Image (cartoon, rainbow, N blue to C red; front, side):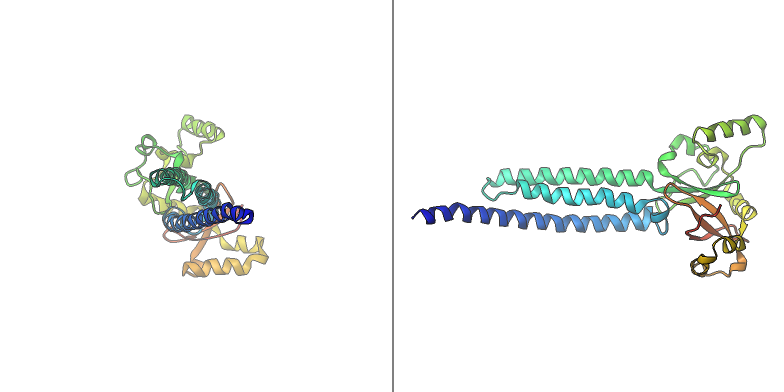
Length: 265
């Protein structure tokens, strides 16, 4: 008789645990599906190849999404109980969903602010600048056609230090304070002058080949991906938050046509 009584609580516990695991696994599957949709949006638009590596978008995305995907199902595992009244169970699961969605929305907002919004030419180098650097007031000072940030990858600009001595000193002081000339839209050149500035600043590819003899194949692959012969290309060093690359640039048009993972300095 006692063994039968003891078996009843154990059976109830096993049933409850099984239902909780099933609910948590369903929640996990839905969370992974949402994460995949977010990844397609973020890496397809905000961090297009190779900026997920250059700007560190992949690491930031994995940190935010992995926490969100793991925490939600774990909370569901803790609160899901079929013995609860239906109204109470729906309330608990709704709270979990709202909290998880709020965390995901905040993560997406953070990724949007950190997205590479501008690739700016500063002298003979490029700098990748995130969207958070710019606001509407600053962008209003940019030349026509450059007064809004793109949501589909960074726009390319060329910054020029003014010839006026006082303005030049101001630019130096601001750069020492962490605000480089590329982050100041009032110093950007008009779009029609950008390509000319890029072409004038180019460095020869032979310099890269001589510096990285072991990277000849990797550089050749990057050049081939541009669809242009090496004789039509030059490069510019590219500074970013995570790592330094080079941009491959068409000599004639000054357009960036590819990237390669080399330190260009």
